[in-house]
Amino acid sequence: MLEYLHVIFWFIFIEILGLVSIPLAGIAGNRLADRGYSAARTLGIVLVTYLAWLFFLFMWF
Image (cartoon, rainbow, N blue to C red):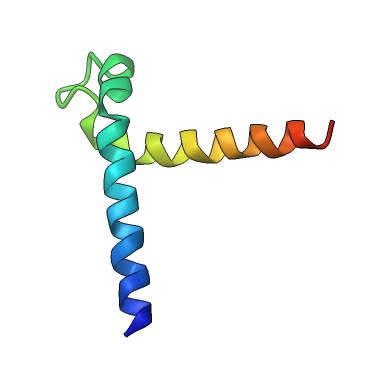
């Protein structure tokens, strides 16, 4: 039962990342037909990953 909750939590987390990154995707993809909505989830995941990488990179120095 706990595995299902992990999957649900992960899905909700990805959806929230997508919703938060819609304005940035709209700015970056203003020429696209959907104004970047289709790339919003991927952009959110990439941004969180990049920020975590920067945080841990600068923690070493």
